Image (cartoon, rainbow, N blue to C red; front, top):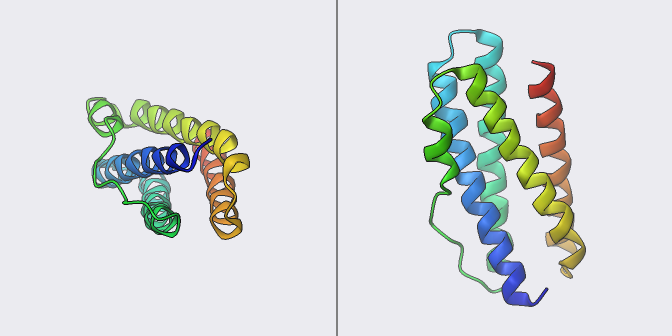
Length: 133
């Protein structure tokens, strides 16, 4: 990948994480089940964390972080049933995993690469938690 393609991929992930944070926050506020609410709050916290990391990574690689929110937000919030929305959110997490698996080998900056690897591990962990729920 060219440096511009890496930056575009990081911004695509940033937009997706921002959308995921919105979905998790809104869903947590709607959840009546305390276990589901806690899970969604944890996911939302992680999504916000990764948004910050991705913005820093884009700047580190001398790019401009996107301010957009991915279309995933609109699609997910259109799902009224919270359990079905959680399944959809998990599919979004899996999409991020696939993108990270392809992107990480292309990143030459050691610190950015390490942060992306941590993000990958966290997303895999959240997928497993949501599947167990």
